[in-house]
Image (tube, rainbow, N blue to C red; front, side):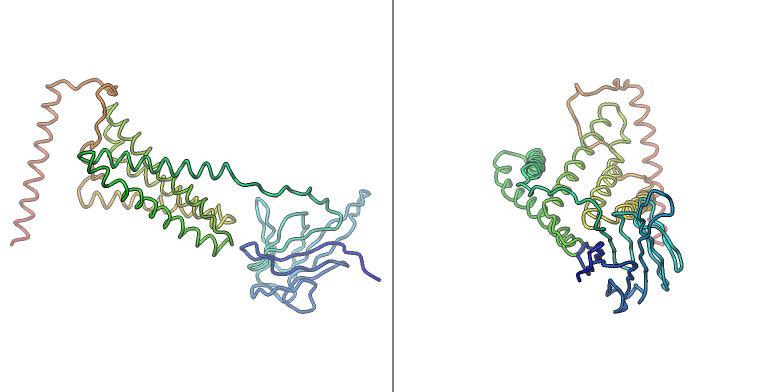
Length: 337
């Protein structure tokens, strides 16, 4: 006589690939590496008898059947994947909510009960016109920005036209190589290439960097706030850190929180270290001594500086430069001696 199937228990690796599957025809069941377990796992971080799973009727009058889990003789325990995951050690007992995975070692275990409602059939995915259009638009904007920048730097039209093919090919090659490396990592760790997703991330980062430079320099020019142009690179670092997090989160989507904290820690330590190195080398926090971008005078919002104030500020600057020259001269004499 065939026993009815009461549920299905499955095991997946950290990439989401199916490792093992076992139908449930009786309660309780056991999970572990031992061959007499109902679900046998090939994970060195799982005990021979790791879990005992049972389903009983609640003592109240509702008649609800609850799945109970008991952690057996194991040093690593089990972790229930919730918004606030909780670790359960040897001897602990806890309820297993429907649809919530349990982590055992490097294995994720899921449970599907026979009386759980089955989701409706999903339609087959159609061609992703929106994603293709978004990718093409981002690549086109990056190319347009590179061509405009090359045109502004060129001396004449003939020079610009000669450099045009090399600029386009170089940009496409760099974009393909960068996205390709991330796609390979994505294939290794998540099982999917996601090449075009990494292309979109890279293009969005490039456009954001150009926008930060433009806004910072325009703000510095319009309001006479040179600090924005001097420290635009710090804002660029934040943009690049966000792009790095987006790439890493695509490769390891289950580690988003940890990746966010790691990238934030790197930025928190790296930016002050970089500024400190600038100060030790040049006695300034920024390499930029003046604004390198000029805009039409009509965009100026700050009032013009009177001539007398300008001469006073230049005179004070001259004194600072004279002292700097004397210090450098004394340092050179000390080196010669």
